[in-house]
Image (cartoon, rainbow, N blue to C red; front, side, top):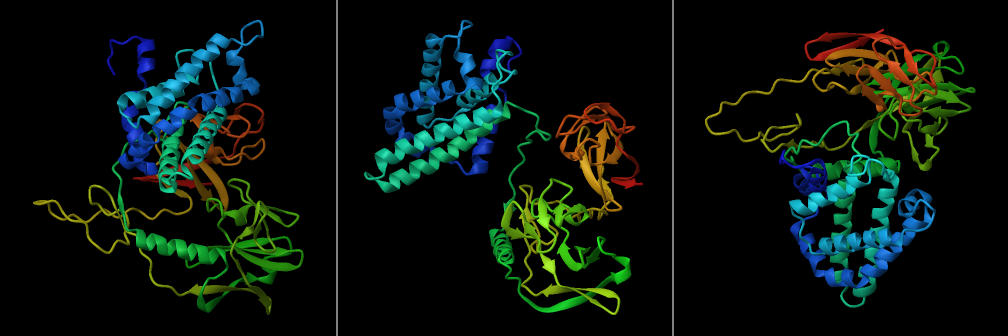
Length: 465
């Protein structure tokens, strides 16, 4: 961006990469030139309904105090001149959007509008919470869809479908542009080239996932595994075993025996290591809860953890684990530079002319208590497991530190918080900790975090008690 511009001009120009970011996100959601043409074809429909849409939009803003206050005078009366000014701007924006031209100037303006809702805009005293911006875009999307269906449903159903699809995709891109202004992203966009993915094996995996969700796992045999002695797991106790890479939690609960897969339905967290109270097992990562007796997810009874039959024989606890028979599914991912991203890819990517074929350096296989030092960038927080406990790992200017992951106030997940220098902030209630010592530096937490030693061997970091 031109360094000779003053602050206000720079703000009105929008971020320097706005156009590139708009195009990148458009590609991500599948918005193409065909969609832009379809929007332009619907411009007269939208033009007809702009007064109605704009009036309903601002009536909605005036209903709610957090958005109404910006249209009020100091004496508490409505500033109708300012309200109409905003209406003119919004009318012009949707006319411009309906033209189907989404160049760098358009993208910069959307970026400017997004930042105008935050303290990063021209007026640092204005801040509209992101949830209201999301609501505004959703409101406009619904209003535009209603207008299109009202005019085109009986006239030309195919035209209606094309227009609805295109506007819906565009609104997703616009929402992302507006939300981007709020920042706080842990990883800025790098605009990496998209990879080539073979869809067929991905579809096969999806079919299998669907069948597994219905309890349709096909097996022809099972494996009888001895998990341990009965005395080793007293009533109220548990044991976690691993069989062929499958982690399973065995619970002795109120006289009954239960075995379930140690992988939360949400993000694969170690659910079997979580708190068990009144028959409810809580995943330590994000708090998802399951009935230990049947694996049912409390928030969605149609979802279950996979469970396995348990039998106690001659003082030994036996778990019956199905052996799955299926065609080998191999997902192949090739990046834009034709380098294989998946070791399962059968085909070899083409080599550049004159370039010798160099076998890729194999990545080290990380243990539960290990992490990649190159992947965990400065200012980032990672997560490992040490002796069944979740541990947060912090990169403070190239130095690595580790603490217990559960905040000492209400057990919030520290790995989902922010790291500012050497101070980590819990995402739940804002407790602050010095990760180099574990000390609590601001409340509500009062107790320190337990710390761990971090050993670095090349590109592998290892957390030890």
